[in-house]
Amino acid sequence: MFGTVNNYLSSVLHAAQDLDGESLGTYLSLRDVHVQNHNLYIAQPEKLVDRFLKPPLDEVVSAHLKVLYHLAQEPPGYMEAYTQQAAACGAVVRLLQQLKDENWCLPLMYRVCLDLRYLAQACEKHCQGFTPGHVLEKAADCIMACFRVCAADGRASEEDTKRLGMMNLVNQLFKIYFRINKLHLCKPLIRAIDNCVFKDSFPLPEQITYKYFVGRRAMFDSNYQAAVQYLSYAFSNCPDRFASNKRLILIYLVPVKMLLGYLPSKSLLQRYDLLLFLDLAMAMKVGNVKRFDEIVRDQELVLIRSGIYLLVEKLKFLVYRNLFKKVFVIRKSHQLDLGDFLSALHFVGLNDVSLDETHCIVANLIFDGKIKGYISHAHNKLVVSKQNPFPSVSL
Image (cartoon, rainbow, N blue to C red; front, side, top):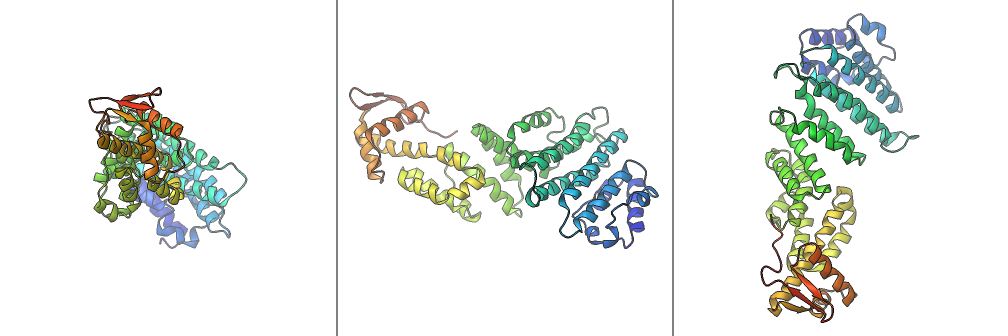
């Protein structure tokens, strides 16, 4: 594509003159076919670029050509390429500040920030000599500089405001913060979007991504009802052709809904290859604690990598609840011998559990609101409420 570097620079110039942000973003994207053009691999392109372009766009293009040069080396110079991409991002910030009451260059900003994140991830994977997450955190600082310019653009009209680019950048920052495990940094970004008058006007794909990450954060904050709300929005609005994305959303949505008492359908889990949750749901429904533990142990690595291990562990309280509710149904009494609960645990295969441990399990269920009642230690009994002793866990 383009053939010579002069043709490339002419195309960039025409896109800028035509205020064509989409084309300009494509010409400066590392995912475009022009990156395969060896004529663009130039170590010091400044003088050539200056003949065509004015600052600060010339800095963006020069840095981009240097990125191509470093990535073409053997082995690829990821760190050098990242440094130049960061410089390009800084030049984009100056371009945004220079273009008063204009937002046509937002697609350029999106591409430069996206490539910056990808290069930072490549550095984390292939380079050594720094703390894990350091390069990604520096990339987030660069993207945040773009975000501040967009968020501060309050004087432009609704059609020309740079605030329309806020959610795209927030999603980029979310991906970094979740990757480096700094979720507390998401809070001011969420507040900024919540206070934005355009929060319901952003493109649907950006809203889906945003709701997905906000839902995950709510999940980690144990705000399960909010997590269901956000993740359900993301799942229902994500097109069916993006099956892998819908599956990713379900990995978090399903266990959160199970924690609130909703068991997933077999057909849904089969469709998205998530039968792991079907096995967990069946064990939970019948109160089979041993089977539940076996599934969690067998799938431990999968659950840890998905970031839901601790959430699934919380489901164990519901397994105990459902098992002990069967004791209540069988005995038909509001004064239940704790030895019966111990027998129930032994019946499902937990033969190493003692009576004292059973007391602890029941006490935790009472504290957590799963059972309404109190323990009479003097009589070794659980006295449950005559009204709704095992409250529903659904919304």
